[in-house]
Image 1 (cartoon, rainbow, N blue to C red):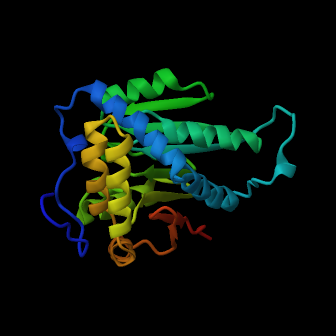
Image 2: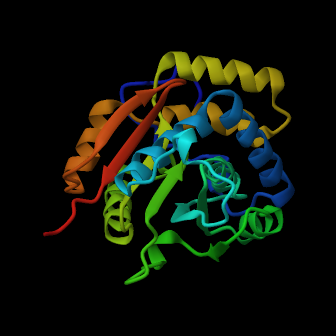
Image 3: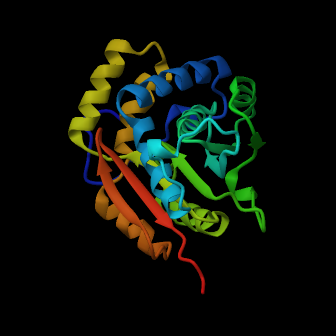
Length: 253
């Protein structure tokens, strides 16, 4: 990433986190700092917006009027691909519980250490953790209601993303959503400065600015969605420099 970055197209440079020789202690520090970044820069809030949109399609309201002291919680099943240490699912589960919605969580990650951490840290109720490449999983007749990913897609090429979208379309009962980065000079300069000042993780300091360069423009998302033949979707820009892509399954008559 030497020299002035080129924002005209997605970078093909691989992040350090994509290597298989990084010590897990370093990965864990990376996960802790990313959770902080997601909290302070609104990444978790965007993920909650995605779940709300799809829960509404299931006739589940997030209105405070729905919250009661009863034990008959409404139930949804939510699967995250590239779940890491389970932070996103934990935030979603706690938020849903405030609205009397119980989350049956499924986390998929191809790093066994991450799956073990997610399992150890989970205290939110029902959950299943799968150590696998998501592409090797097919849910068949027992599809989760909602599938999502957060800061996962930018690790893949456009061609790989077409397959990912088609996989989510096949395996989600109600729909899926994606929360990922918008490639923009202000986003790159901001995260580069913030991580240099505050991060103790060499992975975060190297990968966070590179992640922005691997992020997406609106037109790139539209091309990927069109190539994947996703017919029903919304694509919204969110602060701070994120895209929220939501696809609701069209009921078959």
